[in-house]
Length: 175
Image (cartoon, rainbow, N blue to C red; front, side):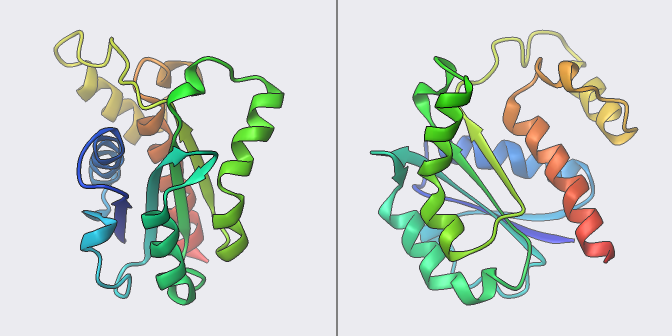
């Protein structure tokens, strides 16, 4: 499976998150290309696309919305997943907050159906690199299907989401 992971901007937390998602998908056997949206000339040739953006004034940044508009016809023909970095997300994760957050990507969903959406605070988990070998153990448990939801919390939410997305993409490609 050949997957494009793209992000708005060329550096920062969104690029870092895209890189972590790409590494998880690569570790699970997918062929991954990670590029900033400004470097994507076409989405042709990819079996799926994952796009990410930093939330800006309650929505996606103009660069990211333009990427979706420009590629809308092709994105409608393949699995398309999105992630949004919301710096204030760590403060409140209640149901009311979730309803507001879902509005941030309503315009994207209005143009292209998404198979999965991830919302992340953009903060790396402080325990992520705490013990030598922990990331390898995490990947092994992931590959063997032994990762429970609570265990994934010790690693970034983006990595756990990427692993779940991979399972979904494998199921979709088997159809």
